[in-house]
Length: 75
Image (cartoon, rainbow, N blue to C red; front, side, top):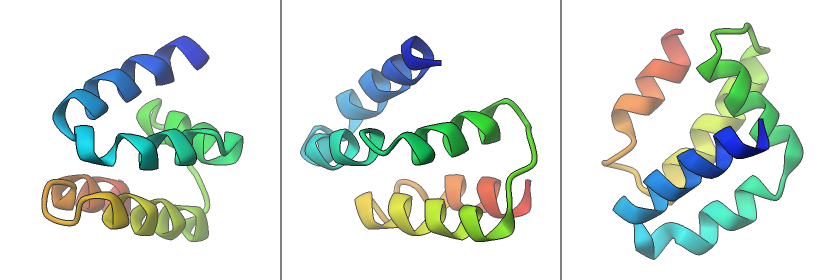
């Protein structure tokens, strides 16, 4: 799981280098990492956690992540 999330972090941070420190702060939160991993693997997560993730992602980069918002919300 850790290696998988590090790869995602590297890809995202290369596109959004200005947001890199925000990603580092968020990915230190293990619960957020687990929730992201669950989403990627197609597991069900509680609606409340979905909204927490949407808000975190939205705060990082509102326009670039709008598709990801929809993906998380309607998955």
